[in-house]
Amino acid sequence: MANALKQKPLKQIGKASTTRATLPPDAALKKLLQMFLQEDLGAAGDVTSNTMIDARRQATALIVARTPGVLAGTRFVQLLAGMVKPALRVHCAARDGEQVRQGQEVFRISGSLRGI
Picture 1: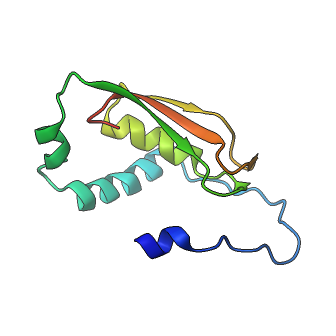
Picture 2 (picture 1 turned 135 degrees about the horizontal axis):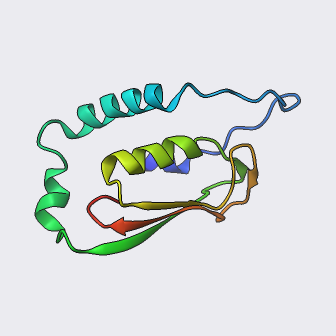
């Protein structure tokens, strides 16, 4: 994993596309995300977080861009947060397709530390 963090960002070849992707309906995305969660957590859930973190503990997580780029996937983050812990609050500081700078905050997620 340490090697993956040290890789240089990919360079753009040619002109950037102006075509916008259309996401499937939320129901289809939720089904896909549920499969990911089931594979990752299984029937027992997040055993480590449930054991180590007090259920009443609240926190705020900031997700920042590691490198300059174009933001994508905000809908996935919002849906996933709602599936893991419906009371989580997700603030997107940029929209899909917007340029982000290295170190720029792109998401702020607040609520249950276990859920985060």
